Length: 117
Length: 185
Image (cartoon, rainbow over the protein chains, first blue to last red):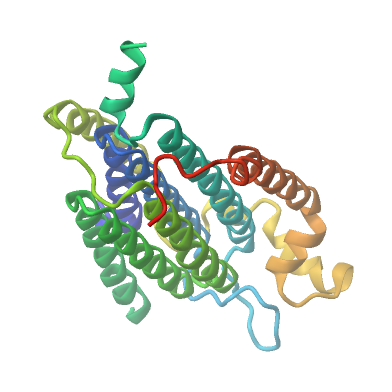
């Protein structure tokens, strides 16, 4: 088995699962969103890893270079980064709004207040 | 070979940063860890030939995201309560999901394999035709703005929606709120 050939993917999976763990185990809403961002950035690394070509160059066309890395994943991830920050902003705005309504950003506190209504 | 070594070291540092972010309970420290993580990811993108992605990540991921998180922490407080329940169930879920994903990678083409299917479909066309059809030497730009322009239009729609959402949640309420919870000093 070629460990060096799969190393990038395995590290990406470790990073993804770290982000996923933060999302499902943390009770704090801000930390959940940070976990979501960790997950997201690891997906970016997965895509860019798939776009790399052995001995390839940056995909800006010029004389004397014949092998370029794959530009298509780069385009997809450029779009994803910008969309990601937009959704992060929306999520954080929701957290601020929840803080105003409940006085807390801890999931347990919010559940308790909802049940006592 | 040098590139591969740098790649391996940087990815190891990314893993350590992520694990540190999990263990910390001060949200300010977690946010700074996230900024470091994004910056390391941007360096990985440079190593993997994605320079456009690297500077977008450095500007947006490290800059704007971190500032947004710090602003939120300023409003909601920086200390996380420790979770009351034990982390066994989340750990189990994460381990099973991770094992399934690792099993999935065993069929994937190896890292930097030039014969991988992802390099065979439309990309040779873009690389070959881009100079005569668009006149832009940077193929990432020509795909983003020309061949896949509709994707970028859709991205703008998403950003506009998110902006409207943020304004609806926060922007209009600010003015009429008397400072009830935070008495002025």
